Image (cartoon, rainbow, N blue to C red; front, side):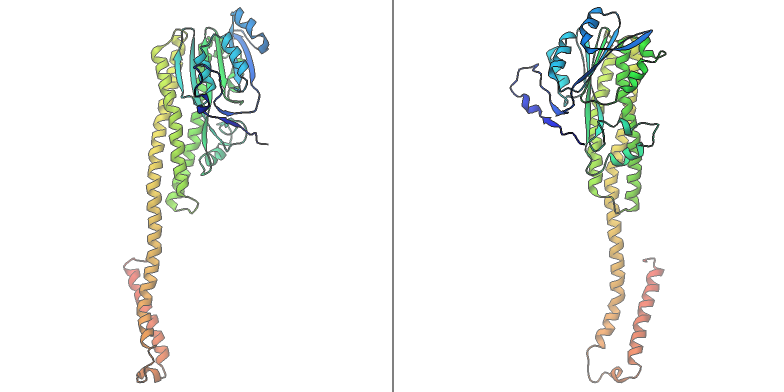
Length: 380
């Protein structure tokens, strides 16, 4: 059963003072859920969110707070007060139309990330169809960029403070399940390193999803290119425009994240260790690689339009050539038939016994000679 979402536009905040908590975006009717994880080098366990105040006061271990769904503003405000977040930070994480960015405050770092989703996909998100170890990617690659498909994004905000990481997901999904699984692995680096490494792991998880999308996108572009060159009837100009529009949308999501990570690596805040900066540099390199791939895809999509028009023109020329050949063959035949259709009394062939078969044979001979001539000229 499909859940109906309520759209809240940016214009609804007009006239409100800065820092006013108001959700902006498509509101999911699912309730807001909070999961709290406490971990250290030798342990990891999930705690009751009601004990969050006590855990923050203790401050002995690393804490990860994962908020799924931004529907409940009271919960968001409560966590913001516990972490001493700036009102503008809370305002930005509730605005799902916020541009990806990085902000360095005195006590914490604020990151806004975007990850691609396809509104035609079943379920909450695309994790179920972009698993590299399953065959579901084939479905994703064909359905992702259809004419009635709309690519959108889902926002993930990350707060990093001393020993605490808080992630805010726009809606519920299994996006971070792999991180939770690694957290409970005794050999995981997430346990051994500080909370800044967990921030890196969350960022890397988001970027890895782009690679899965790009793999499917590459397969789709190859398939589309083949269909265009072959002149397949199922290719329409709207499909190419949809591809170009979606590629532009993806670029708008990747470009700010690349700038954001580059700034984070370049500034190297106090909350991020040198060891974690090395890992973040690797994620930044991945985004540069994705951007290069995306630019090549955009150039190919531009070429698809020209190839499509050229293929259409060639098909039209083939049709016109066939019609021209047929008309050319029938011109002399029509001329002969017109002469003997004048019905003059003193036409000698009218009373000749072999007049009719001779005229037919003459017309067939002319048609055959013209076909042989056209064939010799390679017009047919």
